[in-house]
Structure formats: C-alpha cells, structure tokens
Length: 199
Image 1 (cartoon, rainbow, N blue to C red):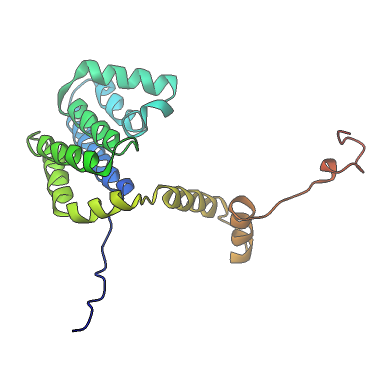
Image 2 (cartoon, rainbow, N blue to C red):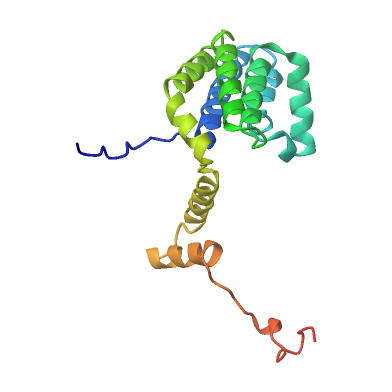
C-alpha cells in the first residue's frame, strides 16, 4: 500500500484576521460619517471623518489628539464605539501571550459576539472567520504571521510614491535598497580622516 503524501494546509495568519475587523470598523465609521453629513451642524460629520486614525491605530500608538478623539467617541457610544471594542477584542486574542488552544477558544467566543452585535459588517466578519477557522488554527499552531512582510510592503509603497518623477525604475529600486536592503553607508565624518569626526 502506497503511503499518502502529506496534505497541504492553507494558513490564514492573524494579521489578516485582525485586518478583517479593522476594515469592518472603517466601513462602520464611513456609514456614521455619511449619516452625520445630513445634520445641519457640520462639526458632527467632521468629528467622525477625523476619527479614522484614532479608531484604526493601536491604542499605544495614538497621539494626544487622537486619544482625545477616541475618548469623545467613547462618551458618544453607539454602534461605532461597539465596533471599535470588537476590533480591539479581536486584536487582544492574537496578542501573543496565549496558547493556540486558548486563542481558538477566544476566537470562537469573539465570532459569537460579533454575530450577535447586529452590526452587519461584524456579523459578516464573524461568519468569514468561522468559515476559515481551520486555516487560522493552522497559522496559530505554526506561529505564522505576515505582519512584518505587510509592514515592509507598506514601506516600499510609500517609497515608490515618493519616487514619483524619477526618470528610471533603477532609481526607485536604488531608493528601496538603500532604505530596506543590506546596504551600509559610511559617510566621510564616520571615518577618522574627516576633520569633524569624533575621535
């Protein structure tokens, strides 16, 4: 009898699971902003439009102004604040201090909470996560995450935008290699031969 080849497992890493909730939260914010635009007081709409980064960034990375905006949204409550809490609860599941079994148990509870939230975007997110539960379990078991790669991709996209107007692709690639590659520059003042170098 022939031995069966090991079956390939498709992994869905935690970074993209949390991104699903982040996208759902941003969709809720846009809906609230669109509704607020109908009010005579335009300051209300501006408050929700300007709250994007306060809602999407990790709490530890907020500026003072963003933290103040978030505190104001907390006082207002409503669907947007509940959506924010759901996003943060999901992020906490993948904080890295739990066993794989604990992560999957909490993820299952999160899906139940999201699907009972009556926020359509989070009901859909909960359903999607349940659908890909095996792939998420595989990624958690193996400790996989694309977070660093996604961060690098974003950095490169920013540099490509900054390189707009360069006359060749080689110049853009040189900028990327300079910022992200294994290139070590030694400027004249790094050497002892320069008059302003530190001895």
